Length: 480
Image (cartoon, rainbow, N blue to C red):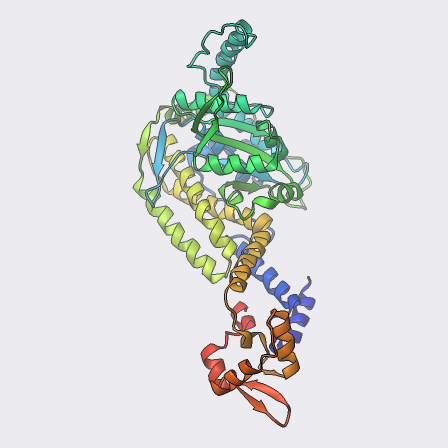
């Protein structure tokens, strides 16, 4: 809708008698509010909030080999892999709820924009886990070879097998086995990376979007997952789901894939990032070289993550998360965005967890660079969510409010304009499913001083006393 259309709609609406907000005006106001909420995140409608110029050393290293417009995406995409190195580690949030290093990053960008640039840093981060998985895969294959049939007597499966990196083509039994093995061998994380979000549907046998949404919700909360089977040869077991992943997709596919999951807590549990490049810059990006020197520089950070254990606290991180909580609350009120408020709760948790991972990786040292990154990362995540899912969530939240409003008793007089005829009154009653002519209600309103009857015009008019006491605020004025 263009600016001229908005202005014309607003002017016409102001001239109309007050009969409730016109649909076209409602569209305008909804679009304006959604755009304002995007700006609340610190960016504009076309550019996300700028990343801090000075990054913590680990992130400076992981982003050094990509051009500037890839750096925000890479800086956020590395956390699922970094978090997969923590095991038996918990962090206590400001509300005293304990969280583990769960990160599920979805990179949204148009085709051929360079979403694959996240792969190389992740490959180097996961190299030690990949090397650890190889002998375990071999041992599992050998055990299967020795015990091929269900009717033959089986040797017990080795209990110390643990495979963390998952391919994107599993059965429910394999996925369940991996969950239980990871829990029993140090409370470790599983990790998956897919080129396209649709690939996550192959993680289990069900192969559905709904199943992916359920796994995302369980994984964020480290809720129990698994299966129980009666058969002696069936895989059984239940354990907390620790599963981090990286997935990429395009804006249309993201909206289609998560269409039913915007308002059920699934999207809010994601860490969403994007790639925004300048349309004027048509030069091919040149990447830096990843080699042994890069791996050697990365190793001390990975070693610190692997060595961590137990409940880890950081007073500076807790204070920052509390500050951001209040800032988010104020911003949601200022921009009148319910979607921003809803998304901000878990965006704060995700950003704080990134800070805690960086805190551990840098030798349990907090810094201004970590704090600046955490604050920016939260706003960046919120900007991406509001850009791609904000309007849908705003719409669905308004519909919820409308359903609740309609489910209770309604003030019938508020459904009528300030001046109305008896025909208008009867039509309103019919629309509301009321029986009878309603004459007794009209007399009651008159006796209570809510309305008066103008014999000259034949109209009923709401009294000033009624409007001051019961009349709702002008919705247009509130919205603007």
